[in-house]
Length: 535
Image 1: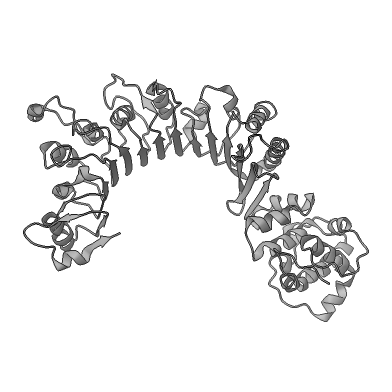
Image 2: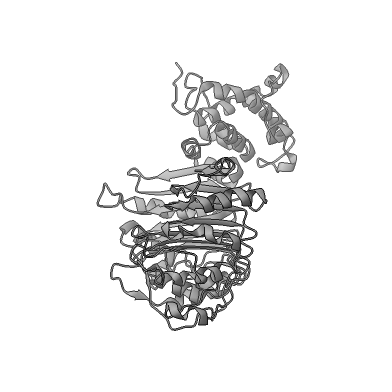
């Protein structure tokens, strides 16, 4: 009887046997003419390049009769279903008899119907030769996974295009087991060594390491000794998720001497990644998740911004600051530094102490003439007054004043972002009262936001922006407006923005989410109600 397997079906095998037999027939003929076992692609039969499952003729089956045992043994190794057939040759000899191209075709057909990691991983473990061929041809597979018996450490391969693949390396302790599996570190090191052997196809490399974990510590020691100098010619993304470690720790700087001429993006949880000036100059995208230790001490922002200044080609910057990460205040004048001249997208996500972080960040950032997208997400639960967080408006032209009576004598400087087109402001504040801390129609905000004349898309979240509709006249090029988590919107202003301005062609859409409307003298018009998009 034929054994059934959970992952594959016998019908899936039979549907490809005829095409494979035809290829074997052509292969037998060419081998008799003196072709080597490894046939170049330009000499491949068209059927070998793309099998469409056309049925073979009787004549083709007769020509391939001598290779049928080899093919059956290959299929038996890939699909453990054909145990009732008589076999005289070993599977190893069958693999040796077939060239790499045919084995790759078998792999491609096996994964054609199921691109899951389980299928590809099972096939990749057929033999060392099969795994080598599959990785040498990364366009044939989607994902390969390998993990130890406890599932603690694993390395995942995933396809990233016609040529190239990525590696995700986890090295952490299983929460259900206090001690790391003894063979886990050796397995991860072997898998990492194997991936480096395919360095000419490695495009994405991701690390998740915790020096407090024994497996991570052993791997880091190995990286700092055996892999101190590594050449990764096509590597584009380097991700470093380092837990419970500081930037000055030399054990986490194993990559500082690596040769990565194609590196374009860095993702790091370290404040200052150990990258040389040459690598910093070629980066176009950077994502920093900055977490501080539990001491709560203030961090000097100067080294961090010195690192940002070295990113002369940076276009996309994403910074996430943990609520325990604090910047020490500086006496530097706002906008005195010249950083990130090519920056086009900036995302700043802060926890608490956002007034200090925002003030210091924008102070060191300086002007960004090409910035088109800005997203700010902050938590304002510690502050009740308007002055405490108005420092966020500094980049838009707002100048700090000492008192409300001194408003007319202030000097409004130019905006740091003159080309801004997409603005997202999300201010998380759960303690806003109607009498305190609500943005109103004041001269301060009129002057600040009046300089954003190129703004096309505006997203505002939080009760601080309750009277945002008063500012609609200052955005002549605004196409879309999105309001979230705002209570007591004025229905008259909403009717004007969503109705009259849309009729003028100024707006494409007004999207509202989790907002309440306070109706004034009249209800919303029918046309306005139809144009509002509730999400």
